[in-house]
Image (cartoon, rainbow over all chains, first blue to last red):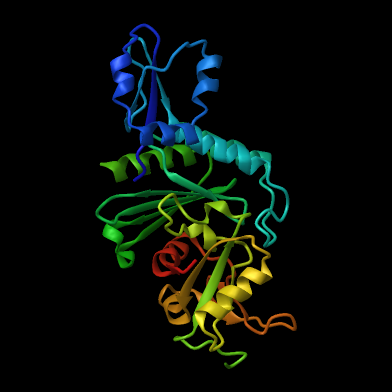
Length: 181
Length: 123
C-alpha cells in the first residue's frame, strides 16, 4: 500500500530543530510531488516547520496537515483532464468532464490514497497492495465501478464486484476500509 | 513463425510510450493500466528474433518515445485467461494483440492485474 506523505505546516510553534531532523531525501521527495511553497503562500503561512509521514488526514490544533499523496493523485487527474484524443498513441479517448469529476470525488473521499493510473478506455485504475501480497483494485468509469480483491496474491481466490448507481462511492470506501482492516 | 498461430512458448513484447507515463509505478513495477485499453493490448511477437533485435525495432518504430517494454509469453497470457491473437498486417508481420477473450476485446481489471504481475520488464 502506498504510504502517504503529510506536510505539516505549523504557524505558531516555530521549531527549527524539527527542520534539522529532515533528511535531504525526504525534502527532495516531497518537493517533487507537492507545491509546498505555493501552498504556503496561498495559505498565508510563512514557514514550513516540519514534515512527517502519516497515513491519516488530520487537523490538530495549530497544525494544518496536507495529504500529499492525495494532492499528487488530484494533480494527476487534473493532467488527465487535459489529455487529447489518442493521448496514449493507441486511440485512447479523451476523458470526459463527467469522468474527471467522478475520479476527483473518489480520490477526495477514499480513506487512504491508492496508486492511480489512467486507462485507455475513459476509466481510472486504482490499486492498494499489502505486504502479504493482497491486492485491492478498482476500475472507475462514469457508469460503473469494478472492484477486484485478491487475497494474499492468490488469483484463484480473487473476487470481483461491480457497482452501479449512486452508491458507488460508499461501496468504494467500504471496500477500502475492509481491505485495510 | 506461423503467421496465424501463436505458440505458448512465443514471447510477446508490449511497449509503454511517453504518452502512457503511468504504465509503471515509482518502483518500476508494471501497472495493469498498461493492458487496459478498449482495443486490447497491442504486442510485438518475437518471431524467432532475439530480444535485443526486438527492442531495437520497437525503439526505432516509436522514435524514442518508449519509456519501458515488458514481455510475457503467450502461454502466460492464456494462463491469465486472455486471448493472444495474431493480427499481422502489411506493415508489421509480427504485430499481435492480446484480447480479454475470444469474444471480448477489452481485458478486464482482474486479467490486467494478472498480466501485469506475470510480465517482466526488459527496458
